[in-house]
Amino acid sequence: MNQKIAQDTFRLLQAEMSKIAGIQLSLSPAECEQMLSVLERHDLEYDRKTHLLGIYTILTVAAQRHMECVPHHPDLTRNILDGDYLYSFYLQFAVKCRELDLVAYMAPSIKKMQIARSNGEFTEHNPARELDEFLIQERRQRSRTSKAI
Image 1: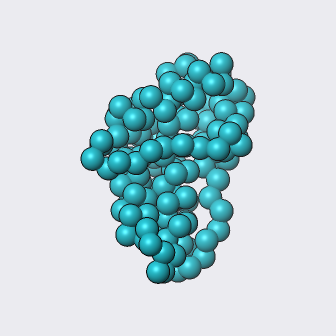
Image 2: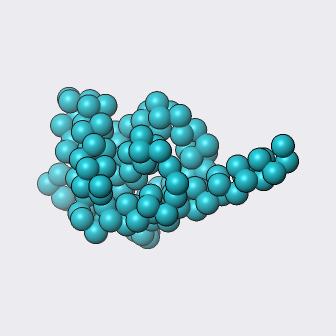
């Protein structure tokens, strides 16, 4: 199941991304497993799981590209452009997948991370943990709403 969802997610992302950008999205098995274990803990439809794994993938690769932005690096310009494109692609993809609440939830932490990195502080960003926290909060809100009705 995990391999199928990962393959479906990467296929979906490659179909949505601009071919001109020339960016290949890939994650290490450990990076993938981190988010897959989050998805397994939540009762979600398969399509939503692929969307959330896609969002996680985009954010992870965008952060990696920006982490590679070191002065005098031969691919400095490419890494900056790739990271910037991926952050805008994340927003486009999330909106298309109707994950606006997730975007609003993650916006402050993503902005803080970007500001810190622009100041030379390369702290680790963990989108899997944030996605898990969002899903827990979402489930609690649904539970409160259903009890109120």
